[in-house]
Length: 258
Length: 248
Image (cartoon, rainbow over the protein chains, first blue to last red):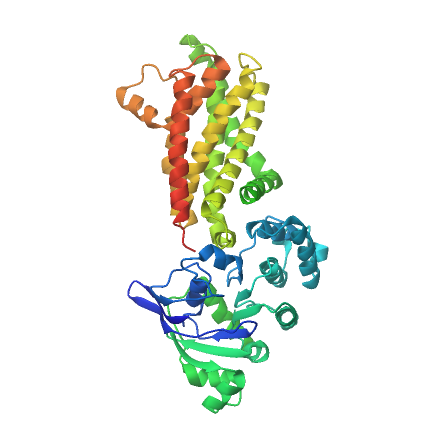
């Protein structure tokens, strides 16, 4: 993407952002609350149109070729997007129909993914009976059903316990290696980014302030951990942009973890 | 086609799984049927209009279909709140298919609810003129369901908050029902009320059902069906347009 800008009225959420993600890599997009991460993801996933600038995904333009781009994307949003009144299997199957996955592939790959994410035994239970971790796993399994080229994970581990987080990343990294799916993730857990990402971009106030591997970022800032490097790059002041409920939850989660 | 079908099926599954809601949503129409049907019956008969239960049963069916169909608009707000709407909107399918699947699903559920109430009116003593009239009447009922499910989609796409729909229910759906002539004959109304009843699409729906089931109608079944088809086409277009404008 090049010189990407998105404004909401007089507020510019993303201001002249340029970076590229290589095929098959795991790319972490880090930034404080309100830095412009989700807005950028929304533009890449064709949900929002950029105010200016150009985007390219697998040689396609998300603005003019949105349907083609959508076929190549698996998106796990920050907020849940499952239908809790349907069973796990019905959610997966419905997704497969929406993405034109043939019936046989839906059945086979759906089963393989649900087994992989340890949800197969619960496939016929309504999602409303699932825990937070199970829902997250189901969303990711669902997002992978149509064999996307890029998997977008917007804070996929928010509110998960270390066991679930660990398991989730092991599976995702594995698929990244075996299927070559490019993973684009955002997170607030620096240890996670450190562990799973090949390269990291740090965004703040709608601008990219640094790009590179975790080691490069640490070296650049002279910090001994990614967290310290992140704080050096983005400052230590608490951001209090207009808070949404999710932001509050995130703040709270951070507070609890201290 | 698969997309329309699976979204239609989703609405149906959700409906069949919510037994409590099915029973609860039958409460209001049953109350109207029982209390007004039998309570106002003697007055109606004395006025020389025959059986009030016969007269109002199609109205109560219309009411059920109206409320159930409009409720699918709330379901959409619900989906927006809980994220499922986003899952469908980022899928590589035209929004029109999504909108049609949802709307047909909502309409089908409304027809099923209407069928349940129809069964209840039979128990209460309602008698259509012939058995053949029943399937024909359900074609008209299906039209009513599509008209209001499409309207609900248009409204649901335009609202962002649950609270908004409460307003719609109170200030829009209730008048639609009271102005439809479901409870009173359309002859000899004061001019202002006569005009209002004529702009209410449900009036033609109830009149059409009455025309088929009882053999007496105010406007004639052909005009009723014509109006429903025209309004239905308009609302589906409006719903599709509003749905295409949703931002997540």
